[in-house]
Length: 452
Image (spheres, helix red, strand yellow):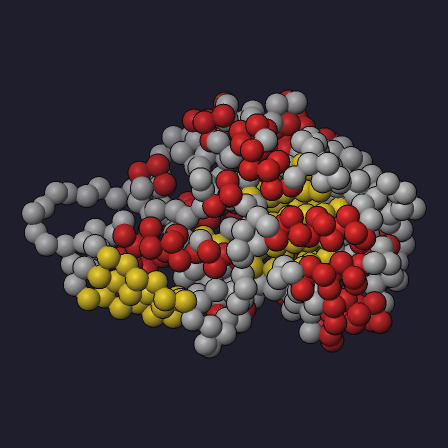
């Protein structure tokens, strides 16, 4: 059982579909008022308990919507999740509901991250996308309040025909506001979103290439949703070929049902919000059992089930394509991702090794080249580029690595050291690897270094 077979990396709970905005792309088809059938506070706490039961450490948990601020019990849910040991984040809408008083209460309840959406470089563009005049101004107000309150900030941007031209200017704004992460959500035509607003494969490839270039010098991390081939683009920029094992890779991207789990406002369990295929309901089914054992979830974690170019692709174990986009386009979640421009088997640089009976000398450069292939699945950057490696010591065939994680309590505690051991053991000449985790000095975003 792989780490993602055992537990998702992230769990999203759509706490409500109520929202004051009228976004043109809304996956949830949000509505003005709360649904009387929403999960209650008690049911929400039960859901949190089942998320905790997945693993130690447990997955990340994000409360989304609609607008989660429309729930008066949001502070109670955040406090309960924090008490149970979860890292709790929210994605509020750009409205007046995100007041200083409300954000302060959420911070005091234990909120770990605030994620807001910025979908235009100026008020007219953003407000047209969000369907309400003044949303851009209120979003900037929320950003400023988050900075004042010391809340880690994530900026989400939907990548579509309406927004793609503004991406460079939005990236500049993300940098100025001090966000730690910029999440690019590549539009999937579900809910209110239409296929005509989605980029084609060549356009997506250009955006991913541009994003990888921007990430080289940005003080924030760039990650993608529903564009797992960003992992391929990053790999190719490093000159590696996973098909030939030139750089052993850590786990695959976090995708629909494969590291990702979604519960909607009435408790239906889905692989993701963009792949709304209910496989049970938390009101009567065990969340852990559904994720681990349901046939669809298991199939989504099996690269052998893929078809078309995704089946033939040398990157399928790391990427796997967007199952949501495949389903939206064809009705088959295992079809090839029509948003990927890659042709499997396309020639790439690779190393040709010769045989020798001589003793192999392990170098610091060899070890660090291997570590560059250990990718944080949320941040889409290597442990080297994130500055997580504090020390590498080599004694004959034994390598001792001292490293940290982005935060104590991170869900990667249980698996990241093993990923590091695995790739370093694959270095010629290495016979034993010891990984030591430390949190002194603590990791900060300033440790991120430019990509090679």
